[in-house]
Image (cartoon, rainbow, N blue to C red; front, side):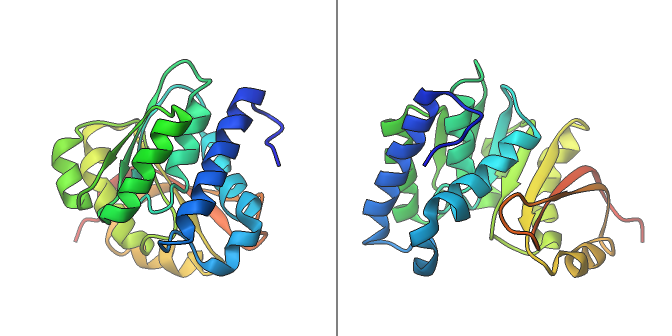
Length: 204
């Protein structure tokens, strides 16, 4: 398995990550076991599309990084961008330990923060982009993201969402104002990546 648009070295790092992931997944729950057989498409390719929407040497924050999707994949892809960084926020200590080993073995430009997102808001000051996958509904994701997006009007957020995303968007617009781009998933036809900019609390 390989990604066509990246170097051989980057594909090798992704392969190292995939093998490490499979080993760790035998002892801790990193993803739904039913999806492990299609790890490459369901998780790695699905995560790589995030970086494809906002490529280059950016500073990312990945919320609820879990098994490293999309944050660790983004970090590995950043390895050939000549710069950039990913702060991976994961409160589960076992998952954070996995992410640290993955960063070491792949040489990915990333740091793991084993803390709650609310605490990460205090210790990580700025970013260019925020990502999250299978973490929370859109309203809560926007609440998590707002402190960083308030510090920079250029910051944007990318969130994977499934077929019911429209109801989440409608609910979120009751609390927030934001600009939205919907990117169709290249992996799951009914899924999207929501790109959020210009986030602000809605006026009551």
